[in-house]
Image 1: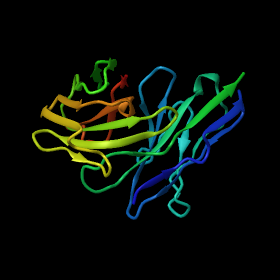
Image 2: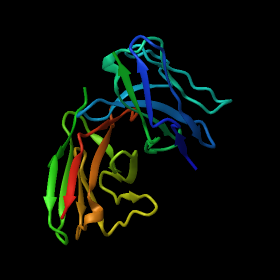
Image 3: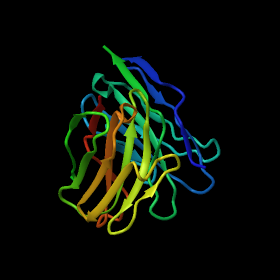
Image 4: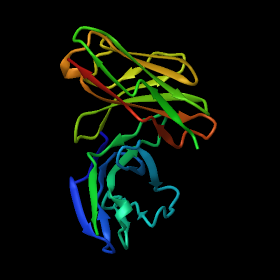
Length: 110
Length: 117
């Protein structure tokens, strides 16, 4: 069964401090992992995906298959990073949908 | 970028009535659309997967006769909540996958907030 776990409901950090949003997953095959972000009063949007190995808005995430983790990191948090972050998984076979974690609300304090 | 729209953005209805929510991909064709439901302070829960021209695939625990999904074209999918009850009050979000782009990315609509009185 597919499962995405985000252990923290809320994470508060000071501006300029490092941020790490945790995500662990359970999947029997080779999944695709994503991070989605939802800013206040806006729709859900893709932040980054593991296959791209890119850095978006200073955020990075590395897929660790051994630990089945895909933690989201940023070295210096900005106030505009405050949002709801969802880790999501999609199976690699067929036309499968995204399965989401419960989300972590990041609050960056000035 | 690709845009997904939903209509209406919010709706209030009486218990027992039916409500139809539209989801449109505005500048791309979507062979597959997904319907999610989100309760307050909770994550998105997948309700069903809708493929153009075929029957929707419902997730376990989702009543297909209650949540009717029609995906008649490559740019439109509708979700009808039949005989709505207060427990159906929720935030419904659709998502579409771009056929041309290879289906890598799901684009999300802004959501429809349903309140059943």
